[in-house]
Length: 154
Image (cartoon, rainbow, N blue to C red; front, side, top):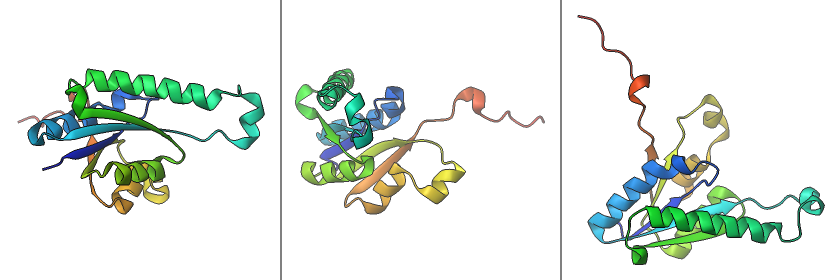
C-alpha cells in the first residue's frame, strides 16, 4: 500500500519518534516499502553567527546525520529499505519539500498531546496535515498505564 514512507525525527527528543517509527516500519514491512528518516536543523540566526564557530552548521549537520544513522540502524529494517536526510530551514516546510523530493505516499509522525496554545498557533504536525500532498498519519504515544483512569467501583 505505502511504498515510500517519510518519518520526521526530532533529535532533541529521540524517544518521541519511537511510536511513529514503529508504525512506519510495520507499514514498510507489510508493503515492501522504504522508509526515509528526516531531521530538520534550524538556520543559525544572523545575529548569533559571530558567536558560533565558522563550521557550526557543518558540525550540526554531521551530528544530525550520525544520530539519524543510529536510529536507522536500530529500526531493524533492511539497510536497503531505510535512508536518512538532513535538511536545514523551517520544520514543516522542509519536511513537505522532502516529501515531494522523495515522492512519498505517507508521512508518519509523532505528535504531542494537543495543548490550548496549539489550537491557536498551530503545530508542525497541524501544518503538515493541512498542506501535505500525500497522506499524513499522526501517531500519538499511548498513555501510560499509570495515567489511565481507575475503574469505577462496583
